[in-house]
Image 1 (cartoon, rainbow, N blue to C red):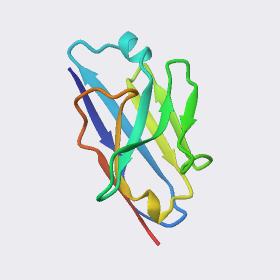
Image 2: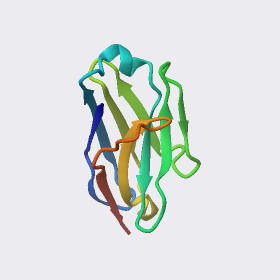
Image 3: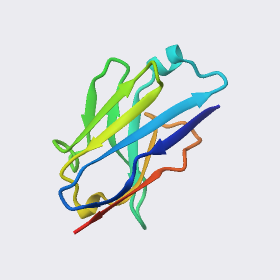
Length: 119
């Protein structure tokens, strides 16, 4: 089973930046296995469903939701089994709990990290 631990969230003003990290671990989860997975960042705002915002595949190709394109950058460190999300030019509508998971996601999710953007 995979464990996912997100960190790096916080309170930031409109136009600010944050960098989120997600560390993956598990009994049968090694660097080689992690290399083969497409990983994504997702977010869930209050009263809304959880949606994906960015994905990076095993080859490093990235895709972004239209709402974050040009502002967010996803990256990965396979040796550390870690995924990052650099968020710039943050807006109040980016306020949400952010999660990472495989794309498509595993059943289990981490606790997420809260991002709050004030206007």
